[in-house]
Length: 589
Image 1 (tube, rainbow, N blue to C red):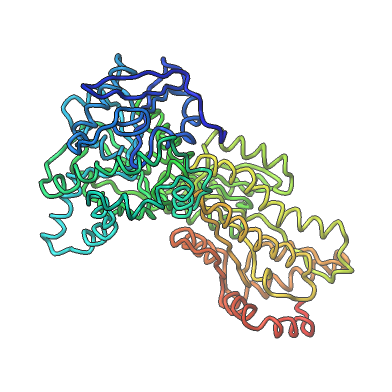
Image 2: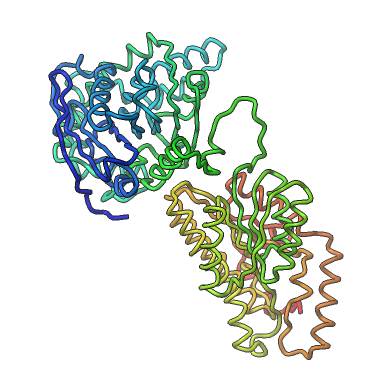
């Protein structure tokens, strides 16, 4: 995605009454039209990071609403009523898409304006879909507040009023120009919005008349908030509506959208871990969400994410229904049990393993329980093979919602008895496999912009120094730190990274662990001995699988599994010198 300001393919002025509206067009006029509507204190530059993601496929139209940018300015508060903004939108829609309805993506007060428009009788003929971002229907919110208070549920309305307390300042004539003058400086506002939305200030795109827009645009608060909340109307729409709700929005609380199903004929609801200004911080998300809705309505191609987001009363769904889970090393052990656990909760599974027969056996087990799964063979240590595998999976099944990098191998033996080849093999599989999976599937998840989960299998060995496990422990410790770094990098993309650290768990990795410095017969004896010891531990891979599911459900970052893993995790943090002392004197192999 380019960071350059997109250059319009065409510009025009659309007149509505006494107001001239500056309109900017991008892409092929013959394609489906998507109209972008900004809010306060922005102009059409709000969409600079979204437009390039849509213009390759659609006819994209952005315009400066009245009182903003290059459109006509007015000092009359009455000119900022929602019905006036709705009339402006219909004038723009008639000009840029006279022959068919247009799709709409709107943010903040632009979304509030569009709620007014989609509830008008003529909306069904002029608006094909509406994606609403961080801007509620004020009538619906007023009705919701009254309904909640009437049944004694005051917390939801109270938190919304608390979040909206700043609006009383905005509605006070003259005061904001004095108190908020420092904040109206473009560089200060960019830093403020960047901080609140966890994005770089450079991503906050402002128009050349930003400071004027900042203060003039506040009239929209005075013109609409109290009249609409106090005298809330019953407003229905037949236009398909998609809500994109930012859970960390400081201005609009998610609870305020609770009653939208009763006011809409078709509704989709997506919640994302983000702040208010999604066009700046999550342009890929908005482009993908809008594209998926347009494709579903025009071509019937409904994505898993959109199916998952649709609000259907009375529909029973598995917790992970319409989610795609990709699992490496899924032919046995933790990978197989994890596949079964997610499949039982409704997920579609892609299982890969070096041994295709083993992967197919896992698929058969999933299918026997009524699930959907697909088997692939891949060597996770081979970067090119993983890239080809990811491309094939994405082409056939789409971008995963959950990626589980589970494939791994065991290695035991003193460092000087472990050959460079064996040491490198462990790093290539245990660390390289995780890196390769994240670089391919993870990159696609980040590019899609809809968030997701990456689960990386580390180990108690990552934070437990011990003799005879230098290669294995090094690989798992690297996975642990890599996951910490990746978690920080992907936080702004809405992708959660979970690090799973099993302790003593009985899986076939024990029976296949290589022991350096031993003859083949001695190695087999050691494998059999430790496999039996782990079996007697009575802690199977199905328990780890349940912990993986819980990590995704609860958003847990680091998950030690088994009591000894928990104990060592905390012990290493508070008494690392003691852990090193014991490691130097006790050998487990």
